[in-house]
Length: 327
Ligand code: ES4
Ligand code: ZN
Image (cartoon, rainbow, N blue to C red):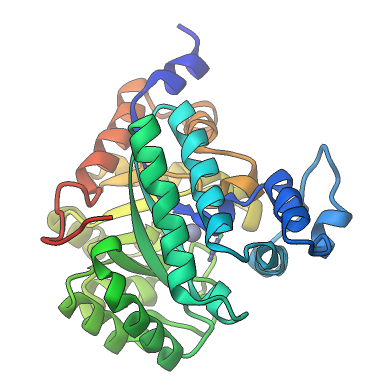
C-alpha cells in the first residue's frame, strides 16, 4: 500500500495548530477585498509557487502578525475557523485543539467577544456539517506583558465554557514561562487546562521546560524536544504522562533542524509525542504532510506512526473534559 494514502486514511487528532496560522494567501486576499482593505505587504510580493519566505521565527512573525489586519468581523473569524476545519476533515482528522491569539486582535482594536463568537460559530458549523470535533485553547503572547496576559484572561472568563485551556506562544527569547506563573495559576483555578510552547531553538530551553513542569505544572508541552538534554526530566514526562506536541515541518522552516530523530527517540522512550502542523497555511504542510515527513526522513515504523496518533487521542483534552466545557 502506498505510504501517502495509508497516512491519509489514518484517523488523526491535531493538538498544535494556530488558527491565525491557518490564514492562507487566498483567504487573506478575499477578506481584504470584502473589508475594502489594502492587501498586506507580504502578500503583494508573494511568490505564487514558493510561498512566503522566512528563515527563522522573527521573519515568520513579521509576516504572520501584519497579515491578521484582514480579520475584522465576527464573520471573518468564523470563515477562518471553518476553512481550516474543512481542510482538516478532508485529511481524516477527527478532533482538533485550536490555538488562538486574542491579543493579536485586541491590540488592534478588535473586541474580544468578536473573536471568540466568530471562532465558536465556525467550529459549531464544522461540527454540525462535517462531524469533526474541535476545542479552543487561548494563547497568551509571551513577548507582551504579564499584565496584558492577565487582563486577557479576565476578558475570557465570561466565555470560559467555550475555551478548554490556555497556552503560551510568540517570541520565547527573554520571555520565560515563569514570567506568566501568576497568570497560569489563576487560569488553572478557573478550570482551564494548561500548556506552553517550549521552542527547540532556545539556548535556555531546558530551563523553560523545567519551569513549565515544576513551577507551572502544565498538562502538555508544545514542541519541547530539548527535554532530551535531561534524562531525569524525560522520565518525569513519561511517568506523569505529559505529552509533547511536535511540529516537524515548522521546525524545518523556522530552525535548521526538523528534530525527527529526537521525536522518534522520545517516542521510543515512552514519552507521549504527537505530530502536528503549527501554522499550516504558512509552512504549507497540514497533518498528513507532517506525518509523511516523519515517515520518509526518519527510521520510524508504521506501527510507530500509528502510535503518534494514539498518543494524540490519549493526551487530547476530549477525555479530560473540564466540567463545564461547552461551545
Ligand atoms: C508560532 Cl512557529 C510559532 N512560534 C511561536 N509562536 C507562534 N505563534 C504562531 N506560530
Ligand atoms: Zn506553535
